Image 1 (cartoon, one colour):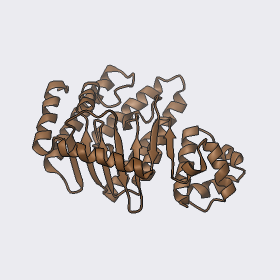
Image 2 (cartoon, rainbow, N blue to C red):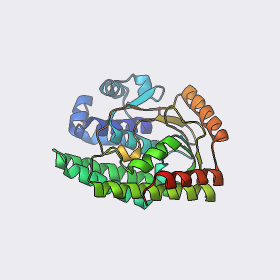
Image 3 (cartoon, rainbow, N blue to C red):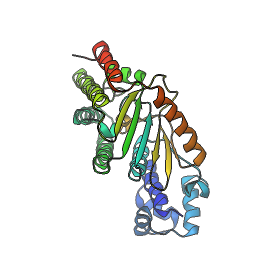
Length: 291
């Protein structure tokens, strides 16, 4: 029984629900101190596991890692994704415009500015600011984890998503001033140039390609020493602090991992790579990106 995994799901639920730790502890019939111990991976009694499954509205089997985890809030999905990345040695990414753990400081800077401006214009400014700070902290933790762990990454990016990224900029869905939007577009151009350089240089442990066929949806296959997960999500990193409609999923089911692995391997065989991929990205920059 993987108590550490259960604890991670419990922490993700706490972020997902917006409930205070005391409220969740009361619903489980435990103390707040016990709740925090469970989040850290300590042994949980079977009757508490049953109550926790009821609280999460999933079956006990799903809680034990046999089923599927669902996330309707981007920030909770990012936290669970960070937890899975922490145990992963190999990551396959299919889709999206960027591979977030490999993005530059310019991306994060533009994102912070856009989220801060959007929060200041919100009717619930304090709550929006707190959400933005929390989201930036989670993303920073993911990037720091990648820099220390250096999991092998093969990322297959979507040309359509990259086009949209260059056109709208970082955090393209946010309503921000034209000055901030221009900065976000310039950051997207800088990011695309970085992607092209990575495609050409192929640093150790990182390969980036451009998909030959647009995916119906994006996903990650993340493999650790003892376990693999599939993560699918409509939430790119730059919407983490914003309200969004969609459902992300994470599962360790063998059949789900196997089919996504096969799709990822087939996509990589036909993807543009190296100088050809870099040239295509630079064509998009010239065609779309601001100067």
